[in-house]
Amino acid sequence: MNRREALILTVLRDGEKYGLELREAHGKLAGRAMPLGSLYTTLHRMEAKGLVRSRQGESEGARGGNRRRWFRLTAKGVRGLDAWLASAEATLRALGGLA
Picture 1 (cartoon, rainbow, N blue to C red):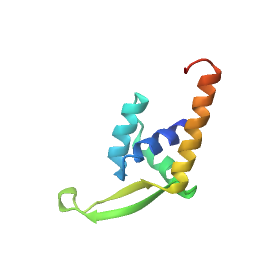
Picture 2 (cartoon, rainbow, N blue to C red):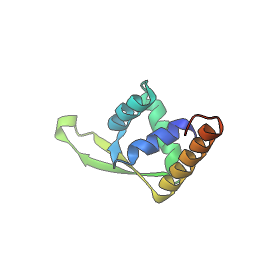
Picture 3 (tube, one colour):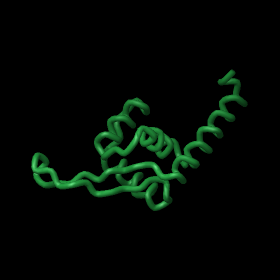
Picture 4 (cartoon, helix red, strand yellow):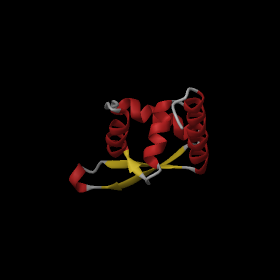
């Protein structure tokens, strides 16, 4: 798992989100915006790995009938994120970055 995936999974810990919500929350954590194309490419890869699941939302008239795709964390995603965080913490500790 890479940093981008870990940040997306961290955002999804708060619950199901759609693309623009994910992009905004990821940007706050990362300190810079991610292009939507990159976000969706990453999300589709993560879905193929079983880290996230998606569903198509209902059609909304206010959006011209376009439907949102909602993403949520899977149990495998939680385990993967926990392992990634433990590894990152151990690395920081080894480098003297954490007490």
